[in-house]
Length: 591
Image 1 (cartoon, one colour):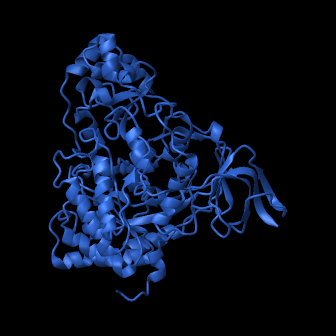
Image 2 (cartoon, rainbow, N blue to C red):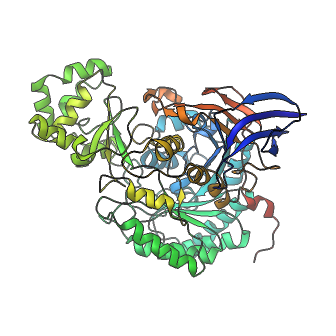
Image 3 (tube, rainbow, N blue to C red):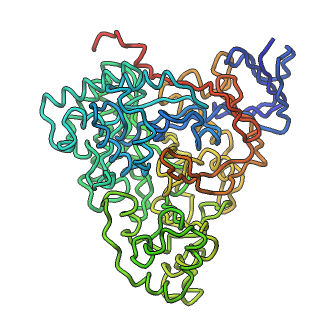
């Protein structure tokens, strides 16, 4: 007898092939049979007539490194059908760490990923590990609503080896050897890979770049040697210049050439963040051509692209361009609705728009960044529950200001944020929308070289919210888009499942086939939608985070266990730590 049968679904198996109608049988946590009418009995049956069945999503770009130590529910990702997450991206993480050395790592994570430091101080069991293998062992003793894989972060390794005061200094030959040895140890313990950030904008709350930002190629080559010896893992990089050339220490083209050399030397895959920027809309196409040439010469590089434009979210409940004005700060203690009423006073508005910002306490924090950036109001729009992330130019605050006879787009943005009960949102795009169209992003999604990621699940809790990308991809790209061609549903499913699983060597998931893990979604595709955006004060120390639920996930199964039913958490926690393939090679002889 089977444990469970999903009956009568349209099965998108994750391979990229078109759907077939039939059943999926599960026994002992794995898929036992697929397709047609399965006659054997089952202890439980899910009627999926009219629904689709997919593998659970594999999200390769998240930042749950702290949350996994205090939380089991793993939202927002778990509520959007994700079955496996990879954390430790962008060169920031929490292992290895010297005893009492957590402050430097927290301040990095808070600055780079906008996760409240108070939550990380209070929520994490500091002292439970020092080395990266000990961190993985700690996670191995916990249970989750999904499966968790982790990469070791360059920032943490450099801080451990060189100390917090020398994190971005030139490493000595001995220190480079230590760094490479720690990465090798981590890969053999089950790290899914190694990450580093090289962009100037990734800073601690004090304004210091992430350790590793300026690391010379020789240091990265030493790390590549560790990958080659272990024969497992993925290198993940945020290259200088990927967000634009202003103030960067290296051009993106030079960085991509280096990434190709690193991948070839490591004999391992590498992935890096790639955007179409406002200043260089053709960047994506140019860089993809470079990557393809590098791959023909022996590299295995897969640029990582998002599902929609990246933007900063504004609201009175979080960050906005007026938050550092003295007259605003005098009201900041009021509840949002009461604050909004007070801010609607025309004289107060004029005063705030004319004031100079108060100097920030922490120059690398989001509180410092948002008020200081001259956001282009031609790329700033209202953000609602059903926003397409593909608005027209006339929807921008600059256009709204012109139509209303206001001085500029900032005046229109101000009116929008204070016009209701303080819960209205806006978004300022900074990548992927230079031509007011997602056609360029669609081409990148269709490119055979790219992979899909950049959800940043668990991070940017009040400023960027792309953890809903798996749901957005299905609902908008495969169904709702009207301003241009959609993407085939089978293609979207493949890129969120089998393709990402194969990149990281997770060969037991991402495909609906007998013998593989029963990590599955049953989805009402016609009814799939994003819910209302809201702030939840549920982080340790009372920290708030922006959340947006989903509608249409009839069931999510992890290892054959129902973790969600009709968009509700069942309370089951079958998810576990997923160690990388290097864990099976701990005794391998170095090449």
